[in-house]
Length: 442
Ligand SMILES: [Zn+2]
Image 1 (spheres, rainbow, N blue to C red):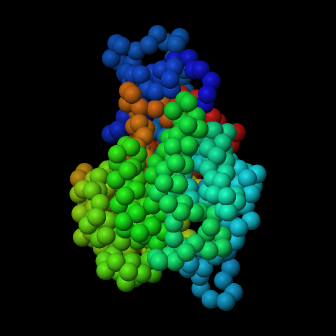
Image 2 (cartoon, rainbow, N blue to C red):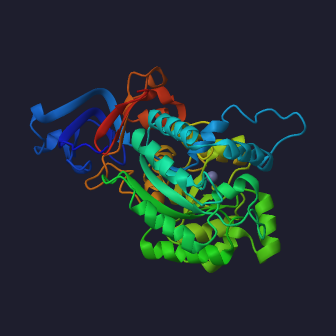
Image 3 (spheres, rainbow, N blue to C red):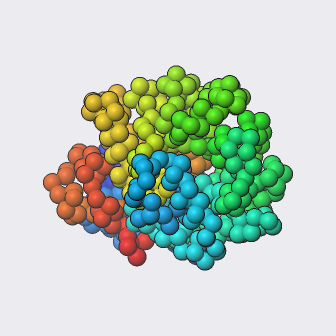
């Protein structure tokens, strides 16, 4: 993504305009990799035909934004799925994850990140928020060697990345970091922000890499630390992310230590805005979720990982205000499919509530909201000019194959629902990041 680009114009058979798929839409991309204009062929302002790259039998959508990933956990796929002693849970899975953490080194981490990021491109993801806490090869030296590995893998994939640099200071409330957790260590805010400053100088110069700030969870940072980190992130204009209320055990521990649930602590101590993204909110009380969304906060749901880990289902259907604040993450990367994440965002609510159309909009439609969660909701959470096809935003796109068997029979007005609820990842023919195309699978 570092070479110079010519400006150019694309026209596919159909293009998502924010409300529907339309023919005759021309996307003008400038040399910097952003949309310069969106024109209609019937509006008399189109580019000359010979300057247009036609994309026959394709439909264009905004590129999917994967707002929450731990790329290295791609190395766990196929592992930890037998349960000889007893039923497993998040905590038994975490031991498996720590065993992987203990044996990683730079080259293996690079392979795993590259594999995950390329698989994301194949699944239509053009931007990823990499929630990165596996910092050190040598924890005794606090070398942060693995941070550079993630950025290098993203550049090679290539994929747009927001490196969500994680502050991680405790191994549980009031507990030291032990064993593999020592590779996550940011012992003080000073060490953490010095590393953020260092990373800022190492980002790709083409705008494809940026930074965000993170407190891992209420287990890994005290409320005082979270509040200070968040205030500094706001001062710097960085998005801020945190795992919130994925596990009941975490909520119980937080209540015992601080007298309130994690979300209540955050609502009490922080000035929540659209720069704050709470990941999971699986067990968040509806009233807390309502206050959080009303303040502008983003809720990142990771349906496939939450299902794989047996976490539970967040109470989204009970909180209409949260529906405009959703985004999606592939989290553990046990499966990488944004189409599945989107459909299971709705399906989880259907299974929990025994009702269809749980996340419908005022017009009764489900598809536009699911697409928004997979695109502009993620872009908002990551502070990216992406997620919508409009001038000034990054030219990040998904090209869907209208001849793919999983979409047979779909017309312009049913294509979105057909894709989101029935489409296979193989229907993602290509993706475009900053105006540069990559065919899926290669
Ligand atoms: Zn996570």
